[in-house]
Image (tube, rainbow, N blue to C red; front, side, top):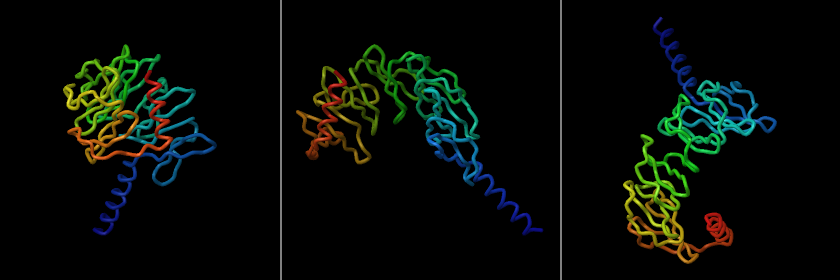
Length: 234
């Protein structure tokens, strides 16, 4: 009898573990569907595109509209958005009628669609833009860094690249300049605490104090990409 209950407990543990796993994306006839961990089809391949599951939801696309599938593979939030990002901290960016806002996991608006541009959350902050100016909201979806910048990129290691007066620098989570705007371009810090910056079409790696660590040889494709990004901004 003891052995029976032990075997039953093991089977239940395996079942619960499998049921808690995210569904797995698969492709068939150029469409996307989802299977469970045992390979059974839960969502037939009927979507034009679909993401992997992130924090319990997958973004799916059909007829140029995006929505979210829940963990059970059913539509949790209808396909009605022109753009959508993953849920991070229970909040996701979406675009409706050409404006960005943020929703919760019930599909309710946390921030009504009012931004021309919005990013996913990173390090507890998200870039937002309206009227050609960029700022940041925090995890509570409040604008905590005013939209005073010409452009901005995501936070990493407590700093974010920001552009003002045609040049880039780095700000802290209060919106104060840590490294003044003096670079032609600037990117986020990596896990080693280093960031790539551009000065006079030359690439360098700097640390969080702004000390130049090394020069990076720019290949033709990187030079073209850098020129293209500059032209798009203008």
